[in-house]
Length: 351
Image (cartoon, rainbow, N blue to C red; front, side):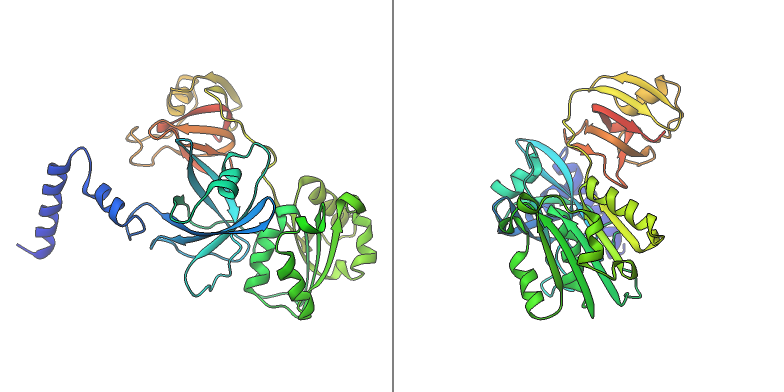
């Protein structure tokens, strides 16, 4: 008998002895960041940035595949016994020597995850991770002249870019209520002192909301620059209109905040956007069953959450994992298993 066959036999024997808990469950307790485990991370430090923002240093597990500057990751944390997922931009450089990654989080009113990470997260806490994703990134061929237009925590993906790549000609316009609300302010001013950045701060409490028409004054050559903009919808809507009106829309790259806070409930109206059907659902019936009963063509396989044959995009709202109670909210690119997910309030499924 080969050594591989012996290992497989020993593993099956362990599964029989430890049932219903699997050997991998014990390994997760001893080595949660090991290769082959669900992707996790360990919080190693929490550094204050402003009165309501922190940078969280995370050691990712061995399955982490790295990231590109400007991307975000989804992080799952257990808050009051419920696993909740949120997406945050990565603010660490891609070549950080110790292999750690950072996210910078600003607490928002009624934000369960953001307030947990800012006020309660401690070193040693284990969190769930997804691989980095997102297309708000720099091109391989770096532009000669760059403009960053940001507001509030919209500075976070841009900070990842600034830390990762040097440019000859970089201008930033950043909006925040007051000077003390500018995340990374000391580091930004260090870059200014080193002549690596030209920075304009707009303090909205005293200066008011940025008038996009002021770009001609603040950055006279703005139309010649490749621009990355991130912030609230009002800023980005104004920027898109301005760039389009001047015939340079292709030079503007935007990343939008999540438009609203989702308050998970117990059941709700489920919209199947492809077919245009909307039905009422309770909080205990799998969305796969809900769709089939409504006459929607729903892909499926094992119906147990194992084969991923039922995976479907979640376009809006939130769903609850019937196995763990974890809440998944709609974000760009988020997929759910409809056979083990139920409506947690109104939601839109792409079927």
